[in-house]
Image (cartoon, rainbow over all chains, first blue to last red):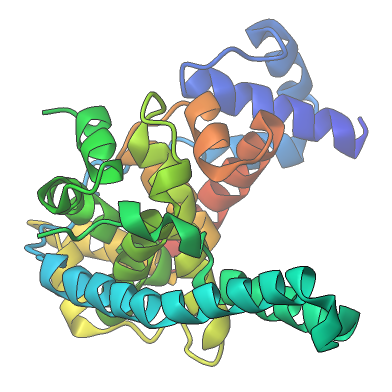
Length: 135
Length: 169
């Protein structure tokens, strides 16, 4: 028997125990286990009794903390919004008034700054009008 | 009101609906986080962070999808990020508060829970999702974002490890 055979047999035996479809028939599993002490031992303890296991009984109210975090996030977004708007206007100005000599370097700087804001917010700052928390 | 309605309303900016979503799922989320991080404070932090992640990503979520499986992916990411942040903490150093929360009506249950809490986080998560939540292999694969074959392999090894821990007690 190869190691791969053993893994297949153990997976099939466990699947049957869990009421799932198995890759091998019961007879094929039994045939292997009779001649494989390792699988016999591994499968013997598989029928774990977890009758004593239960979800912990917990009382938890996380909303107040979540609400504070959302308010802080919203405030952060609110502070960044004028910055995003300013950067957009600067970019447009560089486009419309090339004689000002704002040039490609400034455009790239504006794009990089905007991208950094997007990344820090991990969201689209232009979606602010639809933000939550409109109490 | 179902999750899809709460999500649609939250996406439209209704604060109360987002609150309802948090309040509906926070207990189960906390229990799941506790199963992974085995620490009450970390579990609270992870759940809070996961709900903030939801808030940030809500606009992109399709309300027709089931909410909790999607949320669970965010939650377990937060949990494992927390665990990675303080690897020095040994999971065997269990807080009494957590043991009390898990303790069953008799000594055997307590032994089982102690053994569960000594498992590595991924194995404990696997066992609890299978035996307490009753997820099928397919559901486990979806929830944990791994192939069904990997579910079987990990579950087998988790059970073997748990058996070894129980035998040692």
